[in-house]
Image (cartoon, rainbow, N blue to C red):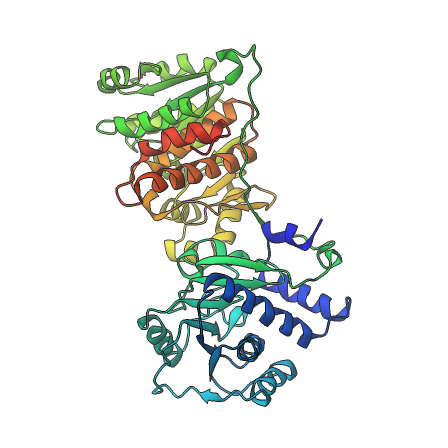
Length: 494
C-alpha cells in the first residue's frame, strides 16, 4: 500500500497534527523539510492547474502555513515566475521564520499587508494565511483582503485549507477564501468534504509529501470518503422473489408524487416487488403512470396490517403527513418489526415521539429534520455535521444519513462515511423521496443498513452528477436521476 492509498481516509485536525509530529519525532523528517516538501508539492499543483501562469501573489500568515507560502514563492521565483508576497504580521516559530528568510535571501521582497495596498495584477493568488490554524471567523481586516482577492477574478490556490474554513467540521463561521484548488498535506482533513466547505475548497488535491507508509500505521481515520461500487450481477436463475419486496407507506392528500418517486426509485434500484400503501385518491394516477407498482387503498392501520407480512422492507414517510392517518400508519409500521427506512414525516413523527428503533433501520434527515430529532437548531447541525450524524445514529440506534452537500452516513458505533459526489442541481423537491426508495430497495436485496445507506447515497449522488452532465444543473428534477441510476447499478456510466 502506498501513501496515496490514504487519500480516501479523512482525519481531524488534531489527528493530522499528531501525524505531522510523528513524521518529525519518529521518522526523523525535520519540520523545515516537511515545509519544503509542501511548498514544492504546491508549486507542482499550481503549474498543473495553471500552466501558463507567470505572476503569482502569495498571502502569508504568521505561522507554518505562511512558511509554506514563503517557500512556494521562493521556489516560484527560482522557476522563473514573478512572485509577490504580502505578509500578515510577523512570522512566528523557527520554521516559519526560516522560510521567510529563505525568500528574502533569494531576493524576494516582503510587503507588509496594511489594508490599503493595491493588489498586484496576477494570474494566481495563493492563500497561505492560516490553514488549519484558524477555527473562528476571519478578522475584519482579513475579511476585507479576501473580498479584494475575489474581486480580481483571478483563481486562488489554497495551501492545506482555505483560510476561514473550519477543517474539522466544514463550517464557515464568517468570510473565507473561495479557492479554485486546495492542495492539502499529510492527510485529507474531514471538514473539507461536507457542509458549507465544498463551496469554498474547489478541487481538493491530496499530497502525502513522500512520507513512508509507516506514518499511517495504527492511525485510525475519523471517517472515509465513499468509493464507487455497485451490486454484483444477478445469477441467471434469479426471480423476483429473490430480490425483496418493498412496501412504501405514504402519500396523504395532495402528496401522491412523493410516494410515487419513492416507490419508482425502489423499482429502478432492483427490488423484485414494490407495493404502495396510500390514499385511495392516488391509485388511478399510480396505476396509470407506473403499472409495475402494486398500489393499495389503505385507509387505516387494519388495512396496512394486511400488507405487512409480505414486505421485506418498509419505506415510511414520503408524503405521509403528520395527521391522524399518517400517525396511525407510522405507529403500525414501527410496531411491525420489519426493517425500515424512515424519511420526511416519518422523521418528524419520530422527533415528536422519540424511540430507539429495535429493527435494522436507516433514517435520512436533512438538516432541519436532524435538528428536530436532536432538539436543537439547524445552526448547531451546520456547526458540526460529524457530531450531529454520530449523535443521530447513537440516540436512535440506527444508521443515519445526514443529507446535504457532502452527505454523511454514520452507524451507532461511530463509523462515518462521506459522499464526495452530488451537485447543487439536486437541491429540488423529490430528491429525498428517491433516496428513501433507493436505500429500501438495496436493503430488500440483502444489503445491511450500513451498506444500503452508503451505496444508496453514492448511487443517488452519482446519478445526479450524470444527469447534470447531460443537461446541466439548473432545471434538474428528481425523475432525471432514474435512468442514470439504472446505468450505475449495472456498472455503466451512460
